Image (cartoon, rainbow, N blue to C red; front, top):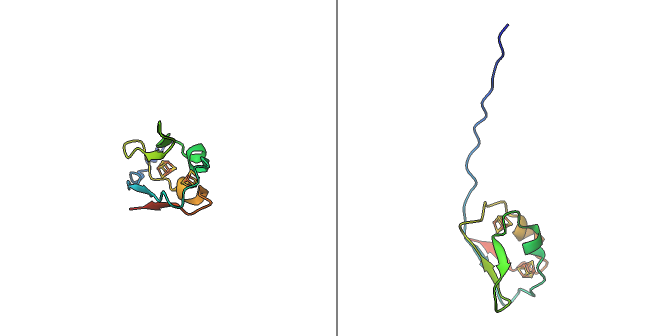
Length: 73
Ligand code: SF4
Ligand code: SF4
């Protein structure tokens, strides 16, 4: 009896822009810690920045924010 190979196709991750509400953000860094791809980081002015190219759309950052400062667009 031959081996049966099953190929599983998965959809590519959904890409979206992450919008950070500066009025709500307290720069706690929780979203940075949880982001698996380093798509979020503090810039030289200590402001949170988002890199669209690195984001895989996992949504972890939205759930991590204690201030609900992150939205997807
Ligand atoms: S959606 Fe995921 S990959 Fe994209 S910025 Fe948030 S935590 Fe990082
Ligand atoms: S988790 Fe929310 S409050 Fe903390 S740095 Fe990220 S956006 Fe700002």
